[in-house]
Length: 225
Image (spheres, rainbow, N blue to C red):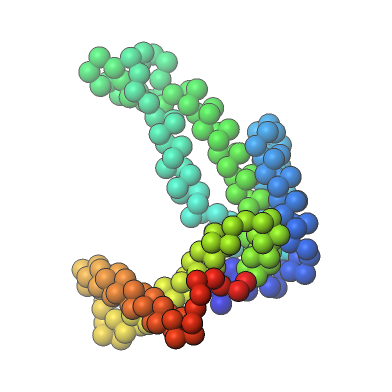
């Protein structure tokens, strides 16, 4: 079981109707999109503390979960902050680049801060739903929203293959570690490349085995959800 599933099942909102949770998160997302920066920051802090309380975890652990999407967010904001302009005087920390200059745009900084606050508020609201709602409740919620069956089936199969990926990757990594495949940097890169290749091969084989099993059970192309 993934750690996200364990947290969802142990949360204080585990038995709460997923439709109610979805409405709360939808309201939080609306506030995150239309409110001012100060309100977005308050929402971000408040929702983070609420999530920690519901999951019975520490704030530091929750902040570590935010680091992964935050890295991608900051990389995207870098393109907003740094710009090339023909007016070097209006840039901060500018470097000459022919007849132009590259530097930090003050207007870009304001836009980046607004985007960062809005994104963090929306991200914490999304975490609230995902970390407090087990996967089977999410499936029922999608069915209640009358989403196409094929979309729900693809979501379920993707979720299933996450476990297969983790299981196969752990098995390969353990075998490589027992053979000292990660004793230094060069062997670690070589072992990692082998792991990726073997992982792809094993996942394809597991998919073929699943297709054979479905055919033997006279699968008609529709999963009974």
